Image (cartoon, rainbow, N blue to C red; front, side, top):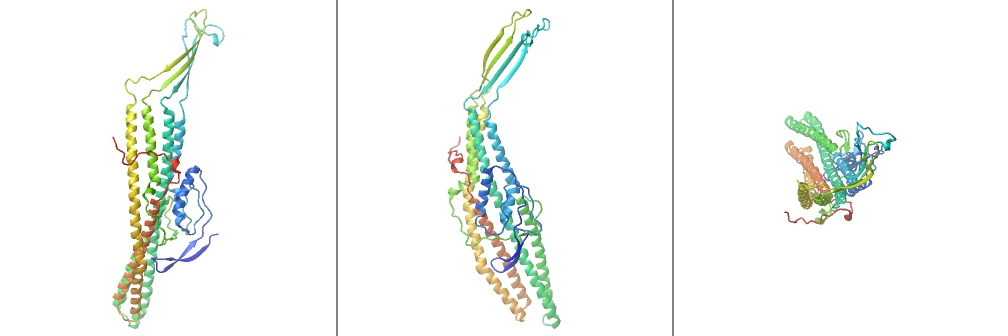
Length: 489
């Protein structure tokens, strides 16, 4: 049975809003089988993202399964949104399929050429006939032959090695896509939470204007306020209502984008999001450029480069011709009508292609180009990773300082000014224009504080995503041993 509990959620660090949180419902998914290595890698990446978060959420779901939206009226936590993305995000699913295909490629590359059996009958004379007796005694020349292609220059092992390295690259790509897409889900979740709290701020503003309008109607009848002052308050109330409607539309849009990022059907219109803002004192991992070399996208590019090197070696080996050997048994019985039969005879054959018109030079050239393209891609990914870590760290510190200033200085000052204006207006010591200016300033300050809270949460999420490291042991990742400043031909 679903249980509910009430608690307050801070808005911009000041004031608390009552929220209703639904306790987790039983797991509603059905497991879908994937490889254990893929599942372990995905769950390890998500565990690193969710380590600093602690709030009510449903039990971990399997890494793949049916994509179902949350039940109507149920709350949605950030952890649940990430778990749903692991099951339903199309980019993650496509990356898993790519890894599965690469594992099949290893099996294909490990296969050696099958022998070829040839059976034939010749020298049949329709005029003389085939003679009498059993089938073996018939006067026909029957041949049984087996041919086997023998790969030279270690082509089989080179082909398997290239496929294995490509499979490792696909596995690293899965981790990179998981980190990227779960990070995108976090960004969309915080956007939706910010718009949800903007709606709450504007709802409180509209409620305040409504109460003031009701009080002023009574004061108007008593002659304490003028009709012009009442009209000015009504106009501001209408503006606040219009802003609230626009904020509600923005919130519906943000929740629809969150559902799309998660990969679940629907728009989450009936679901309330549970804000889980990170603390300003949340520890921030230091900048270490060596961490960038352990990021899944970088290790995937490194593995692709190693696979391209193996493919280049395989293409170079293609310049050595393969050999086909064969063995033949021939049965041509002697009879009265065929005195030229040879009886039982045997033969051995060797076939070697003649590289007269070409020697697979085009394939070798293409593999060379592909190798340097993979090298350029590795260098590009590594450079972008290093720059991204430094950029996101600076962005995080700026967002942290802005939020701290909002909480400690701007919001208290705006609340103090608004409180003084409210008190002075009720005592008749100030006019309605001063009251409206104070309310507008407070409303905008609270909205800015909400935006600052969202910017800080998104900056921290992006920075942690950028510092994600692969869960694959270093010894299992192929290394191209090529420097980023390696010369090109």
